Length: 283
Image 1 (tube, one colour):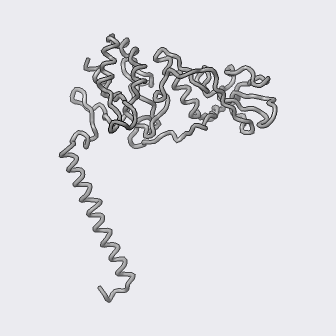
Image 2 (tube, helix red, strand yellow; image 1 turned 30 degrees about the vertical axis):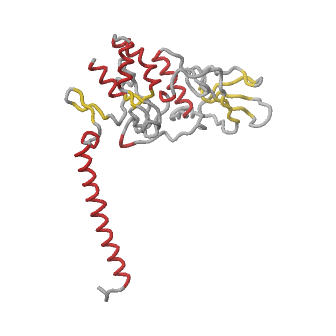
Image 3 (cartoon, rainbow, N blue to C red; image 1 turned 60 degrees about the vertical axis):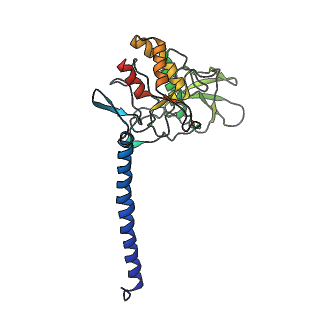
């Protein structure tokens, strides 16, 4: 071995280290940790699967939709928070939308082209839909009554306005604001370039939203199985009505399936939607 050139000895040493580390960290360590987990916490190690009538219906760790084949919420079930993971709650595509608070401009769909909703419009549309489902106001600051972002493009970008466009409301929609600084507001025309204008979000008169934030925003993973207690309580009257249950009984079940703060101080109490809906089905 000593007679081998130094560069060969170095490569052989590297290969030996690779083999040892692969055996220890790639084989032995995973087997040991998996074995310990299966012995000590078999349910959690197996994915925290939830069964109903002997059939796996989901995981307590991954959210899911409670809608019909057309995507319409089923009235007798509590609804989960939105998901940006794949087509929704896809563990193989765990992700957020990666859209930030400055994403307020839609791309209106032109002929033969697809449009794109901004984060603001997604929030506005979800809030309007939840408000209609739960029988409360879905109004939010910076949202139009028809559920898109209340944003103007004003021309010129500097100085006295001579033109104002509600860029997220496609013609022939009625602009949410009739006049801006003495200029009549126009509806947005698909395909027209408004990039030269000044972006002006308009807060409007909406106060504190009745629809909680987690009802209109996706989690960072897109897999969150929980909703806030506030969102659960908002849905409780609908679920009670659809199931013919007393509202107090539904609220008791919410309390039974509410988890506290992590380690007693991190985060907020949350409600596991799948477990709550299964408890409702059991009566």
